[in-house]
Length: 426
Image (cartoon, rainbow, N blue to C red):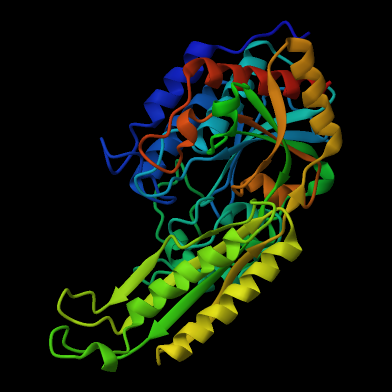
């Protein structure tokens, strides 16, 4: 058993400090990537890592790698971390808990002048939530080589600015990698993918974001598989007209058509015999969005998630066909555009077995489970052995201000991560 111990008080202090870096005080945490609050959080984390003697590397997408001071060139690296960006009015632990725990591992190893067979890095992935550009895991997709330079211009915010434009607008060189006078160039993008031949493995610690551990009383989840997802953008266009003067029989109401389509999607997915597939419409825009005007145009996102790729596609194809039928019957036009797609992933069996052995030896109640949420670990798992650890979320709440986890569970998860890291470092 490892004799070193993390500083639990420091871990909790860091988490409580970082939740103050929000654009919505008192209404959850809102900290979008590349924002002023993102810069404040980055400065805090980088300052702590530098005080621990860590090396800091920030790439063009603003992913941060923080290397242990005893790391040795030529030795493979074990990576741990997560993200610090949030959804709007989100929780205080999603992502940042994994970052603070990896930082705590780094600080503890540094304080003990630890040097193992392998190197260690704590990492912060940029733009995981997709709150800016509508694409989850953006930073890790560039790291894995899934995204390339064309995505800098294809990904845009609601205000029309592209990812390239936003990155080129950054000015704080303390916490960001600032492009040169010519902006981001091909060499910057070519250097984004990691040299995975030098990565031993990755471990991500996260809150569960669901109710399973909280209801069961188990303190740890060892993740077997991560759900894949397929996301489409639906646009329905009808005819705008006066809300009082247009008879019901003559309406071509885009919102009514969208409402019927959304309920039909839910009906289709509820037919799943495994009761595992989920469908969500989380974003909608209505035009002209006036109380006395029949909606002329509606745009909404729709996603299907499951651990079975065939089921994802089967349900989504049925939903798209149903949406088109509804649009035709209601005499509105309809388009369904594929937005993004991630494959289900089975995580590394060796890492999972090591976690199981460690949990059993420590007497920690745990279970094997799947993750319905996607994480940066998904992208890294395409390249190297990857493992994930969950701790309970109180009442299963996440992505909302009520998101919370008991302090003792936060500490237990970080201590378990530290134990796994030490075992892997040798």
